[in-house]
Image (cartoon, rainbow, N blue to C red):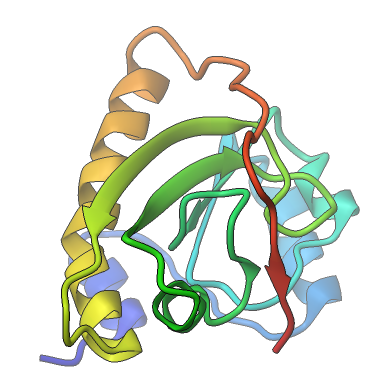
Length: 157
């Protein structure tokens, strides 16, 4: 079912502050001094001033980058007849979805998939990708990553 991030955080003993203001987010983050910034399903660009606050900032994007950068990647994967898609964890840089790749998980696109069904099937794939990346982070540390290879595309909102 639905859950509220503030309630989940409070139940685990964490403070949670939500904001749509870039300035407020930057101030909160500067005060917090994070070791890691994680983005998943966040539709806005994080400013470079925020990304520079810590050495490691990662994003989980629902496509096999560099294909289908930007928005609605599941729709575009189906529309363009891709046989597979997946989740990419990459280092965040100021340009959308262009950072070095840390890990990718693949998923076959099935006949009859819709963007919604594909999104739902990608949720556990995202969790697997995140587990692998966090194992690296808390183990030996994140690697530098590898360059994105292959045909690139970008889809605007």
